Image (cartoon, rainbow, N blue to C red; front, side):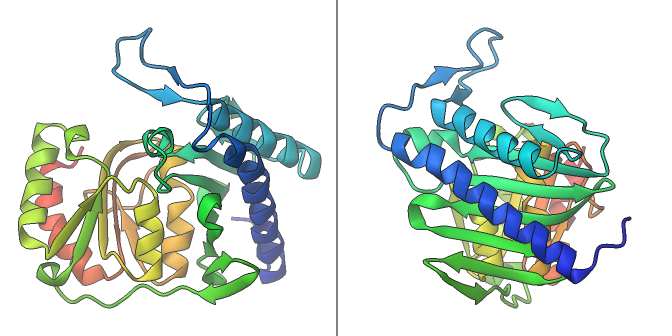
Amino acid sequence: MSDLSLDRIQGLEAFALELAQAAGAAILPLFRADHGLEDKGAASGAGFDPVTQADRGAEAAMRQAIAARFPHHGVIGEEYGEDRADAEFVWVLDPVDGTRAFVAGLPLWTTLIGLRVQGRPVVGAIAQPFLDEVYLGSKARGSRLVSRGSEQSLAVRPCSRLTEAVIATTDPDLFNGAELGAWRQVRAAARLARLGCDAYAYAMVALGRIDLVAEAGLKAWDIEAAVPVIEGAGGVASDWRGEALGANGGQLALAGDRRVLDEALVALRRAAA
């Protein structure tokens, strides 16, 4: 990997904040307003897959900013695909993660901004502009919440066993049969489970409010931003085998405390792809 100094990482984090601001400027006028809803899944019969003008406008704004500042960097985005995806520095963008929440007027959607360097996630930002929150971080510099002009250091909370844990997933209906069985086993052991938070649940792990998030069927843009934020706050991320997350998405397990992750993996491994 490139020898990135802490100053260089700090500069890249500052740019991730700029991208979050650009995305928010495109999204917020359309939140709880006429957002131009379309169904990307209608033509393929893949089920309801919503996209709005906010998704497309925000990604376009971020891509323009990246091209202006770092023309040699690559971009992978949910709405407009790949551009120089084999570059040394690649920004991985999900302009509105949780479009269903966005359409429903719920402030649980986020903008996900990740930077991978030589294929590894280095910087991440999870932004919720309606709440004026950006969860920003890297393993090298730690993670923090940037909100209303101030910064707060982020740290996961200790949780020694799954029976004491608060866990989350977006929607159990998104799991296949084996995955659903594994989730039900984890949920039966946990203290409390919350649904429907999408990537905002990742931020709550970094904030020390949720202990474990399990998801499946994810794309790169659903995952890339989360890993540096969680690791920078002292947490851990893996696939359902307990191995490093792949570059193309898949099954995800994030935890604040490795002890909780290890317990959950006993069930999750049985449904690992």
